Length: 299
Image (tube, rainbow, N blue to C red; front, side, top):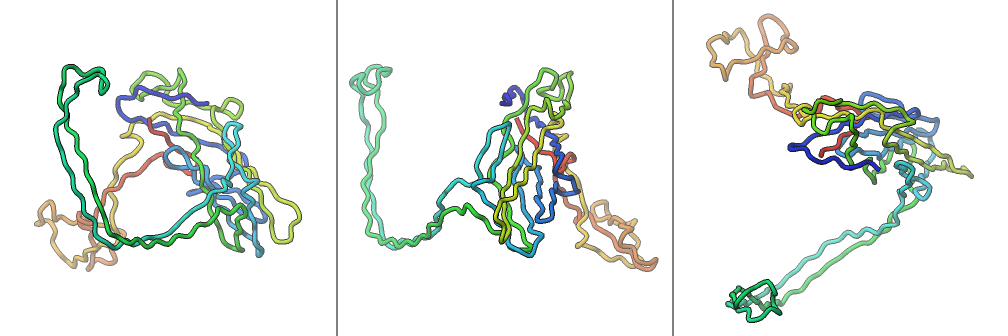
């Protein structure tokens, strides 16, 4: 079990870098492939997302058996099939209600009310009575969770149930706060990693007599500590849909707020230039360390 970290006066972040021998890293996701299907991951997010999407490459249905599909964290297995029931519905109420209330001052004359109260202090108490004449109509549908999930040919379905961890990692060589004069990053190998998880997925195709099993295993390769200002930064970007066309216009007389910005990408010819005004700039928050094999934890 990973111990908690306490003591940050402001929020700090630990960024976990995961590694897998069976899942390959791509620009926006991690992917496992075989001749039947792809299993796609993106771990990024608070506390980590070990869920996955399965894409069926075949011309047959693929059936995922959730009874035999498990999330395993540090040797402890968790079921993907939880045998839950769900209910959806709506209700309409028509009618009129009335209520009356009273409020008064009461006195405490004995320790049976509160043994810590002295000589007869007063306190406020209120009571109310209400009545209604209403009719409620409601309808609902109850359905059970499926343990066998069918994925049709050339389509996908996603499975999300757990987080990777909500516990920050503590080590004497790893800082609690980035200002501390210690290491800000620790490296691990599979033999000494503090956290490992895997998904075991059981599936069949039409006509198969036996199940096929996929195991995607990940382990923590490094943990880095960051301040909020380093974890998330604000950045301006241009909205390319907002363009102002300026033909042979002198821009030096414009005020600072109205001064357009030349965007060479949209300059088409000398007699016509396209500019992006300041109003076309928007500010967004980005995470410079974003990668599909990473996730973060705030403490």
